[in-house]
Length: 351
Ligand SMILES: Nc1nc2c(ncn2[C@@H]2O[C@H](COP(=O)(O)OP(=O)(O)OP(=O)(O)O)[C@@H](O)[C@H]2O)c(=O)[nH]1
Ligand SMILES: [Mg+2]
Image (cartoon, rainbow, N blue to C red; front, side):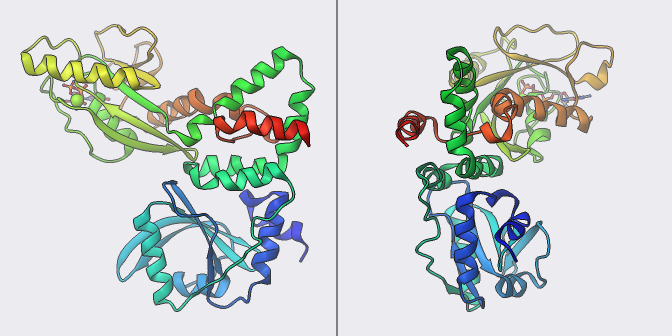
């Protein structure tokens, strides 16, 4: 099988330097062997290579196409992971926390699997590809991992393209590249609005679980509550807050002061305007909440009872943070950590 044919099964390791990864992986003796492709750390993503026999043993059937697998060990769920066939093995994209990694490691040991050391796994002469691999453990979410690995292929070409642009066009491209920041530091979105606007209900609906109490009693939420959601491989942090306009007692004022402090740290305020209310928060992204109660209202309407409206909102939020980056042609979507961009620029200019 040629390298390029193998890579067709391996959609997001499709990069020149990835060829080395597959070549190294294929050279391993393929029994019950595994190799952690990413180093342990605080990253949200861990990449694990498994030999095909080991995969079939652990998941009770061979992997023929990319799919989601539920990994269990001793009846405990370790993780839900994306698995891709590639070369003579499979790559699993696991959540990168220490507990997931330890669980996976225990399952591998119990299966009698052997760690393979692959010293030249990421070896490449392209400094930008090396930079991309080195940044992999810090990236959050699947979209970031895909974009970063694409840098390993397109990095040099992207910089050559950049160097030929007018200063005005360079500025636009740099602006889009700077959005890569949100792939490393998850964006914070503060829900905002009058009491009973539907903030807590929206937090729960967007995150797909009951994180905050919701109900008709005005001023129910007294604290800031965090949830996370993933859409199109991109992870967002959402914060519920006490509602405004309640007047109320000392406790209400304290709660609102706390919410204001959190809002000051947010990357975006999402203001919910329920039927009968008007938008009040300058600079916020406004949505008209509980739209099922008043379908004639202004757009964009949002209702926790309308799954399409929730999906549209998630899409708007993803576009808000990484839309300019994703709108670029694939070969120009670079996703290095922003603090490395200047360093990479000087390396690229010198090479
Ligand atoms: N019909 C309808 N009702 C909703 C919707 N979202 C929330 N509600 C209802 O509106 C009421 C208030 O919802 P909450 O989510 O608690 O509102 P909140 O903004 O968190 O309120 P506070 O915490 O008091 O500021 C509850 O009775 C919800 O069931 C919606 O999209 N449609
Ligand atoms: Mg609430």
